[in-house]
Length: 186
Image (cartoon, rainbow, N blue to C red):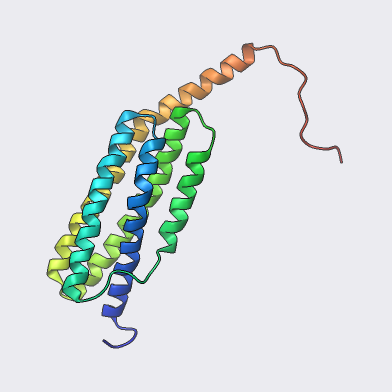
């Protein structure tokens, strides 16, 4: 295979995607555990099942190419997973944390949608029709997961806002003690 060829790029992109998906297989159970909303938790559990299938599809492609899937770490996904973990450690109210986790998950989905779209088009150019259909299946699942997260956000985010407004109203009714100023005078 000529160095710098489109086929070499294709294999490199597939390895990156494989690394991304295997990182997600580890992250999704943590996201499900952090979710307080039952439907959100179910969505993460369902996407974990799909992600495992996507890993298997990528392994099929690597087998057909007679290539190994390992050898590359997806730094983009690593960063997104780290950001998601930070979000889950925040001390938000349940609905607010769910809203934050949805945002982190949608950033992951958009990254995957871009990655699958890229490798699918390269596969098409290379005439890898069997690969195209496998990649389109995974791409469709990623788009569906993103749509499901959007639907859940439309339900959960207003609940998060209502909870925040209620907390603010309760604080207004509470007697206020002396305020501590965290800034020092210059």
